[in-house]
Image 1 (cartoon, rainbow, N blue to C red):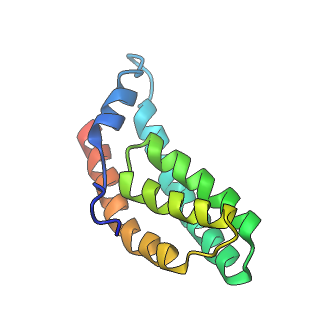
Image 2: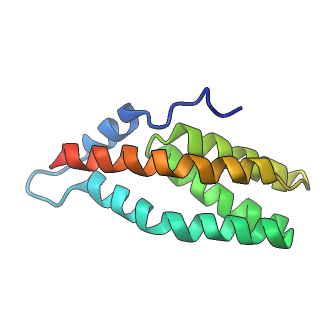
Length: 120
């Protein structure tokens, strides 16, 4: 279902990288580091809210992860989180999408890490 989405659209990160100010710490590197640092917390919150049947919590956390993933070009994670968010807003839990999210995270981490290496 989500395999049609690319893991990482590098053009999104390249566009953000255009905002880099010479002589300053890497803007995109900071965004990626922040994202990776928050990823485990957000995915744990999604799983916790799913287990509790907390639709409002699922909506809130999946929206946050969807938005940050989309900004960084993580199209597959963005699409999965969108499904979780839409389901929560419709009063429906999406356990298959949460499972797909867990399976997609390693490739997202690798893609972002490779981009970070490219920046240095």
